[in-house]
Image (cartoon, rainbow, N blue to C red; front, side, top):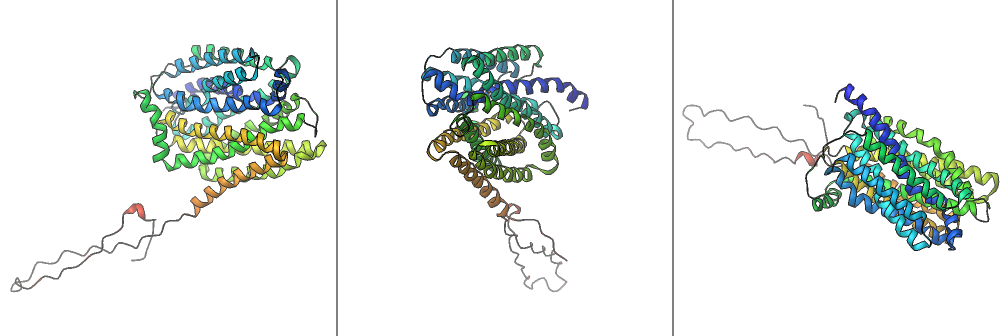
Length: 441
């Protein structure tokens, strides 16, 4: 791909980043208004967290069921249709009169707001391979802006106009982005003609056959589970007896963390230079440190708030940078199956996030804020153990293959009837069982 084509792709990538932010924000703003939903519908705060869990579970289901269509359908038509359906689902959620209809509508919204994984696979095909790390970081910055700003705006708007107002605003933004994509996104042909059942089976097959994909899924699912556990529970902490704040406080905490979205392009450049593995290890260490710092958030007062700010900053940086590293790794596994690779990856990641939200609410209800921090530390330890076990799994070097003996000279005259000496040579091992070696001749 020429530099000219790459420059032409820049406006499309910027628009896709904005679309990612709007779509991802639909998954995360319910985290900030959970207490408002509880009081508005007359249910307990723990019950209100099922809205967050349903949205994330719907997102994981949508990734598995809809993202594979990115390889089979025209990208512009698919993205516009999904955003329009998202807007309708958000309007339905805003009119819910009981918790069950809201949970159902939230699951449907999560299922169709899967713009980010589709946009990532699309953008990877618009730029040369050496720029995919930067582009992945740019799109992730858009997603993270939506993740963080949606919680801030949702909490403030919910305090001002009630919990239904953030749903109405999110619907309006979804319809607006759908119109922009319909007008500005280039028309591209689908990359595959496989039938839909084959597309659904492909992610499972890729998970079975690609160890690097499985490793990336485990890394990000564990970190993202801890991330969701914290952000689902922090609203309960801030509005509880320790701090006694409003839902706006959780949104303001997320707004402070908006600065972390600047780290993703930097992480993309580091991945391009250093490779994903080194960045993954640093991310695990950062997330582990965040669990320790966040534990002091249960103290309350200024020291507790300071710990929450610093701890969530570390958590967000670690999670976001790890997402860039793992995304670059899986996109390098195949050019014509990126949507299916992303399907397997993101499904696992958001199933981890769904489990993290559920476990975080349960841990907070039983053990308080300390239990949530212990959950983050435990999940990070699982990822570190997997990473260390891979680095320590050094294959045993094979013995150098003996030199092949030179052909025997023709028998001299008068010795034609003497028996020839046979040289036995040992069969060498396959190259896949060996590691590189050198030896002196």
